[in-house]
Image 1 (cartoon, rainbow, N blue to C red):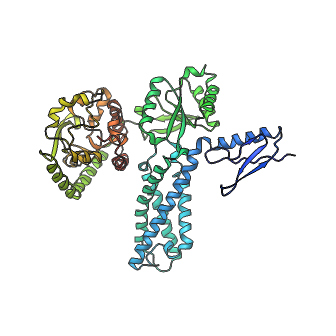
Image 2 (image 1 turned 30 degrees about the horizontal axis):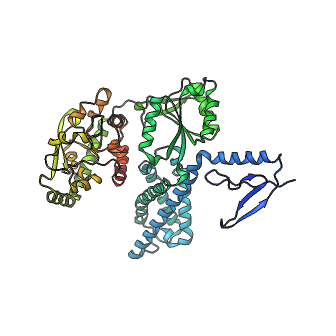
Image 3 (image 1 turned 180 degrees about the vertical axis):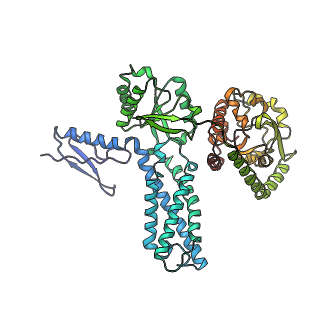
Length: 524
């Protein structure tokens, strides 16, 4: 019987050996030489070879990004862990604690270091730390902090127990605490760099088919265009009616997915019935396609919504938006402590900026502007002056340069900005004096964007709930794109923040603010 040509799919889902006309091209292990072999594939065997190739490609298909990201993140974790261990080894030698005070992995490195790396990889896999990027479109380092702190804590204390069992003498708890404290930032930085690397690779990009009404689809397209880091390319937009009758839609959609070679399908609008939606989701899942559901009532969705089942039917229960006074008091306490400490620590930077501003152009150091604050009360917002003195009074002179039509006044290259002011704006350092507003209780570290009076008058209806909390130095608008986000979308983001607020989200937004400042997108 004729031998079968071996078909090995590449990580991207492409076959390494092409079968056709009885010729199989096989790559050698080094990849430097190619050997041409002739293998006869009978007509009876050919369909089996093709089916096997298609099945292997489908197995990887939509998971192409996840396949690579799991390995990239595991490698970055290993590098971060080895770096932390090396740092602790250096500290250990300087402190002359060689065995008694240091973690056991340093005392017997050839045995315990590989075990430590392997155990961390296993724990991270079980906890789903390597699967975040394939399970959701938006994934940032900030979303991993809570789980990473818990996981690294359990891992570090597990090593401490191992040290107590294996090492002679009484173990010291200090190296274990250092290991825990160093591990968290090391892994976060390593993962951030790994994702920056991944975003530039071809396997990271995913083709998506967008299904929904034109208005809903346009909103999703605009969002994805603002965030190329998501790596989502909309290859085709389909309306429900294009798929035929409800009975035909599941099959027609599967055909459209195959034709577009889509890795995922985004449902931007709700389906008409539960049975039809269930059929569509089942069909897509069987074809190895990821599905993203965007509910039409997304504004009322909450992080603490409870998903449960009644006789197999999924039910999502939404709680009320009221927050306990104790939690609000804790947020205010955090504002006071952090802003007070930051004002003391940043005093030299404040002095440097003040001198540079005075040398750059005549006028005061601070720019003061009336904004709408808590419960609609006006307050005076402070910023480092980045424009010529009196620029706000002469806004009408440059009004024609404003390309915004949504009520906001933003000029990408405003001629009123000073040389040093441009540098401050690029890294958002002009916002630092708002720490004074936070300390005084007029603002919060995290919250809705503080609006000028003209902008606040444009906010109506349920969106005025933004005035029930203190405005913030940073928030969803600042983190997700700043000036690139339209005014109405900014209002919706702030409304979602107010209705979904929790203290842990404030910490995440603070972490993401650092990344947004470094990126500098939308800062002008």
